[in-house]
Length: 384
Image (cartoon, rainbow, N blue to C red):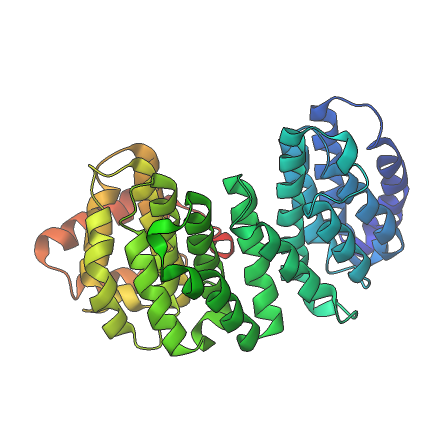
């Protein structure tokens, strides 16, 4: 229905839903209510501006719910709320406190539950910075978010918390600018990379995560090139780490490093061999998928790269992976090919590739294009 015609009906619907979401309902009911509130926000738009404080309170409270799916839906709903919200500073302050384990219910939650709540708060904070960070009016709002991520990035024992903290730092750096991003990389990567062998698993994993998140944002291409060069070398070293978690994070990060290059040909010559080596069915499945995710980031940041002679080796290696190995690995490489060939636009991307590829590769690409790629509706590139 037209949002202006539906407005009065949505207003009548919103109040009761906001009141009952906090009741002792089963998780399935809470999930349905939060999803419905998200749908109402999508349909209602400005008509619901008066309800923003209640929406915000409801969604933030849901971040502490025992059900993971309720927390996930609350994070999605906060993203939908941002276009209507005009006062994001109190929300950022509350999420920073919760992510640091200093929220209102921090003392009553057991350790495992606290980790889940911290992760949800960090994910929500990243969403708020992404969709509403530019609305922040209080000077310390964004720096406090950056500090919250810094505190957890390389010391927290849970890998999910470290990954979410890196996401927050990436969006905060994008808002604060190049100088802050350079400082973060110097502090968390360069200063520690001089003695990698003595770094803990948590530290190395955090280093890879922060590189992935900073370089996958628009600020990545503005990073000081001396810092960029040193970080590239560090990530290549971490790609050979004996711990799968570190190797996996580094394989995604190298895609962001390549994507933010200002001299793509020279960077390709530096990283191509290592990336191809990880695209091997003998590697851990997580590592195989990680390279695919990294390539997706590269394709998003460097449109057209994989339809040139320089990018041919990597896209051909990805094509092999898309046609062999475990199914979930194939799905990841299908996503990459979909982005690289810009399937959503037209067949021109495929034609460009066919103009460069040898007969055997061209034949395989045409087959996977017609049987698989054209059936993919969308790939959520922004989350990579």
